[in-house]
Image (cartoon, rainbow, N blue to C red):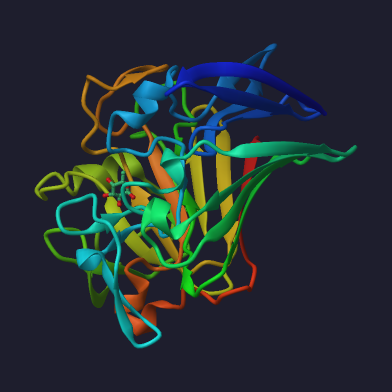
Length: 342
Ligand code: FUC
């Protein structure tokens, strides 16, 4: 077990720290204090390490595109229609950042913040906890929120991501991670296989806001109830505007893991477990070559984001769940990523 800290970059006069956690199997993750970002997931291949996350080499690259690469997302993942929702019988409006809608916590979401952190180490695990107080004036959501984002790497090659929130007023809390994975030695994820514990996905309008209607996956390219090759599924969507997946799956309760991503060529795989009722799948359909990733210029299908969360636009659809964080109550949400190579 090892922890190493370096300066990643300077942003607006602040040092951005990179913290690397390594376990006894030579698996490592690195995190950035900007956006509580998951920067690298390094897995051993022969005597080297391979990174299976998309990432950039500067703070500016992270913040100058709309893709939230690796970043922590909060207070609310996904889109809130017209930035407006009911809370305690009142209509609340928060700042918008995508047309009239609020995406991923709005213009001052978790991803834009520089977080404090401390580390913790035992024989079996090593972790970093990012913490930040976010006043209601700072991001425009009700209540001053004390938030933490903890990344723990253990000797079973498991990464556990825990978010906590506590506010002095009732507010919303639906955080997630926007890590993009590519397990393979190819530039795209088209050769990967995907399985999702879901038999329904959400219908969306032209602004990607859920209409409230659930659609069955059976008999469609959206059916990942058994392993499906992503290249075949994406091919089947070439007639759509999106030309790939940017979709919200309703997760079958009590089925774990909720998703399995695997690369048959390298035998690398990743499973995700979580008690949240949704998984957003985004296959980087709109990546462009001006994105200077460390793995090369941006192109569609370079990575896949698998965002475990509560069904988005939640307060506007009572059947979707409850993301209200009641005042002076601490809520914790956990997502576990298990890496395997066999
Ligand atoms: C996912 C998508 C969004 C957006 C973002 C970067 O959360 O649902 O459409 O493109 O990623």
